[in-house]
Amino acid sequence: MKLLVKFALVTCLVLSGIQATIVFAEDQEPTAEKKVAASGAELAKTCTACHGSNGISISPEFPNLAGQYRSYLAYALRGYRSGERQNAVMQSFATNLSDEEINNLAEYYSAQSGLGPLPK
Image (tube, rainbow, N blue to C red; front, side):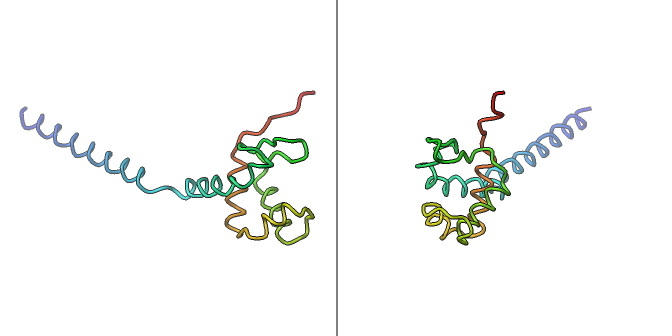
């Protein structure tokens, strides 16, 4: 009986050690999703002057970005970068963005909570 108890105790300790190692490893290495979110959040600091700190515009002159479709945001930024979309301010910001940065910004803003549906 004592042998069975010792075996069970050792098994529990080994399994808990494995679990702790897995949890520790997950905390140490940021996932690709976390890296994208961090990059998008850092890039978005430039956008806050017009589009608000959370993607909700501070003025009706500027569109809300929070909750927009990721594909639309990326499309719009690429349009400003190429000159297809005309807006001097947006073109000056988008000109220096890489495809990866555009994707990260689009992912960041699409993940933010928007205003929700408009009242009827």
